[in-house]
Length: 451
Length: 136
Image (cartoon, rainbow over all chains, first blue to last red; front, side, top):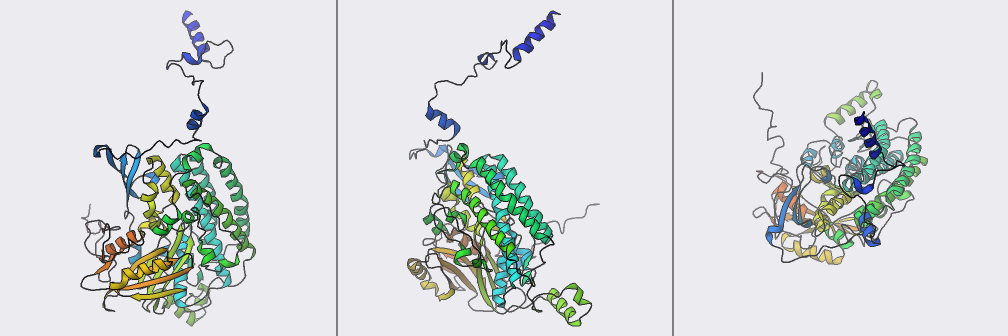
């Protein structure tokens, strides 16, 4: 019985907040757990992360022995794919960075020379896998420019609708993975959760969640599904609410601010020198958006604004993506309300394959069907470069045609490829932990880098 | 909107510098076209410049000499040309003079041949497991 009594005493001892006590903070096995009481306000701020002490200084006399070259990637979650970085470290400070790419190179430009113009979007859609619609759009626009045709109004509006929804889904992934890299894991789950809403709509419309092959030269592959307004209305209702949640969680969060503010500065001059466009350029205070400056697919008819921030740090690059989602929602709403009726493909028999039903009735339709799917339509000689504003910046397509049904040369100017060049500028002389935040803020998609 | 300007290899660097001074702040794209057995000389380097202040684009085309296959590098004017010139070197084998680090960028360092040339057939490297011995 004595033993039992001991046990009950033990229980009492470990029961926290018991009235009788016996449990003291400084009486655990590990010694005193009490925080020091005389902590200054400054120290508290540093501990909570609202104040960052920049104690890094460049020491010229550091010997070579203290420098270390570390390979980060290609298999590293925070490199967003298979990006490899050779990082020269001095303690925790990053001295030099060399991005090594090509691990995902699949020769898509070479493949593009062997596919007909109708098959082309299947290839380009796999480049930037987070914004497939933009890749299809830019290829289709370039082909249409060479053909000198204009797609019907409904096709144009559907294109704008889908690409702007795609911009939202792509930015949501950027916010999610950016949060994950810094340690805000809930942001990762939130971002992917809301993206699911958009992917479901894409699946309903195109049949696939990614790599849609939906926008094609001459229009779009299929009309919007029945009751599509209902889905869009749901998206328009839910996404702003969730964005408010993100803002509540992160906008005034001292840890989030401390990790991102004044980190990874990329000034306008650097952006111009390295050819960086898109959110990174706009976050540095230069309001350049191809949707406003060189509009495509009739986007000049929509009423929206281009958010510009001056801070040019990682925080601004994160914030501008949130603001751009709100602007894209405006465009989506206008596209939904002003969706014109009519055909969603150009009514040109040489470009658009006939509908399946016509094949049983018309010999001519059968011939056109056969010709388009075996040989493809011919594109006049010439060359064209068309650029659109993808979620990551200027996405351009350069096609040289020799008059046959396949491009003679197809080159895609991927924004990630260009933005990656600035990585050494952004990362140099900053702690390795900030480097991860800097990569996330540039939002590279390796499929677009390597092609 | 896009103007095309043909320049000679000798004047290429100087012309790009002039355009930079005229307000073409950004080099957007640099690529090459292989006119194998179609045109002489064989290679053509295509540079796309963008002026943000004037909202204008300009395409510069340089014909590359068949014997030397060399073009001056413009990385000293536009640092962003670095990756693009490496890509063109990797894919077409065109050399860029005074480039800080002209190495292969997308293909492995020990790769033989230049994939985007027209005389480089696709599918000429067999897929690894195609000729593998059969396992019973």
